[in-house]
Amino acid sequence: MKFVKDFYRNSSWRLLLSLFLFIITIFTFFRIIDEIILEKEDEVDFIIFQFFRAHIIKDSATGFMYLISQFSSAPFVKIAYPFLMGILVVFKFYRKAIFTFVAGAGGLLLIYSSKMFFARARPPFPLLYKEESFSFPSGHATFSFIFYGTLAYFIWLTNLPRVWKYIMMTFLIALSLTIGFSRVYLRVHYPSDVLGGLCLGYSWLFLLIFISRKWYILR
Image (cartoon, rainbow, N blue to C red; front, side, top):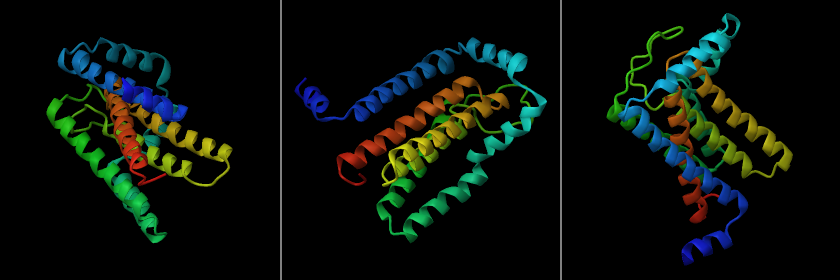
C-alpha cells in the first residue's frame, strides 16, 4: 500500500490517466481472448458487420477506406519505420531512434506471436480482397497505434506550443483509430481483432514510455 500511495502522490494526472487506460486495455485484451477467441462468443462481431453493411458501407467511401488502410500496411511500414529511424540518427536523436526500433521490433514480435498462437481465421466475405494471415489481433491496428503513438510522444517532447502539440497528437491518434475502423469496413478483420490490436498497441507503447521516463531515457 505504501508503494501505491507514494506512486499516487508523486505522479502527474497524465501519468495516472495513462495508467488507468493501461489497466483498462489489458483487461479488455484478455477479456476478448477469453470470451471471443477461446469461447467463440462472436455474435457482437457479426452484429457490427451487419450494421456496417446496412448503414456504413458506401461505394463512394470504399476507395478512401482502402487508402487509409495502407497507412499501416506492410509496404508502408517497411519504408516509414527505417525512414523515421534514419531521420532520428541523422539529427543525433540516438535514444529516440533506439526507442523507435524497440517499439517497432517488439510490436512485430507481439503481433506475430499472438497471431500464430490464437490462429483465428479471417472473416468470411471480405469487401475487396482476401487476407491470408491469421486475424487476431489486427496487425494494422496494433502497429498503427505503436507507430503513430510513438510520433505523438515525440511531438509531446518538443518545445512546440502546447496547442500545436495537442492538434498534431490528436490527428495522429485519430489516424490510427481510422485505420482500425477501415479494417472492419473492408471486412478483413473482426471488430474484436481491431479492438484487441488497439489494446495491445497501447499497452506496449505505455510500458515503453513508462520505462523510458522512469529511467530518464526519454523525457
